[in-house]
Length: 96
Image (tube, rainbow, N blue to C red; front, side, top):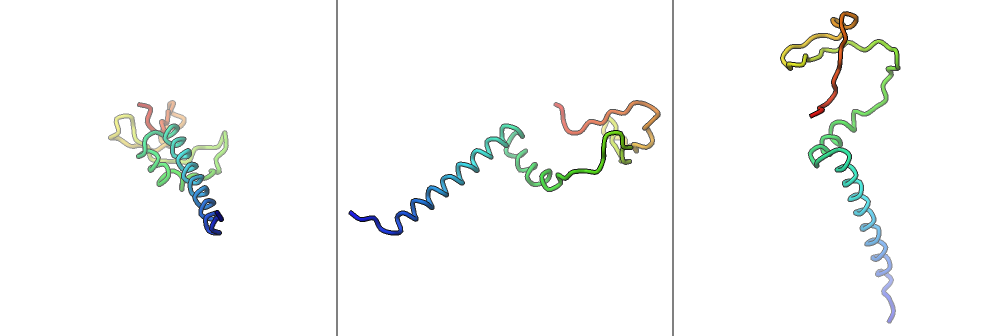
């Protein structure tokens, strides 16, 4: 029995497609483990990943001024208004 010349190519393409699918599955499962649920992965890939870049701030630099929300979530203030007057704690993200 002789093999058709295209069956070898087909086998290579199937192996390649299976490898790529397996790799994508492994990446998805790793993201799922480290980031959270599928919604969080989508948010990371859609919003956070494009904005990731190295900034130009270094340890000891003055923080850039920003409008911040107080703990009650209703009032806002500017960072330059409170720096040097009292301790300021900035919380990024959720810790619930």
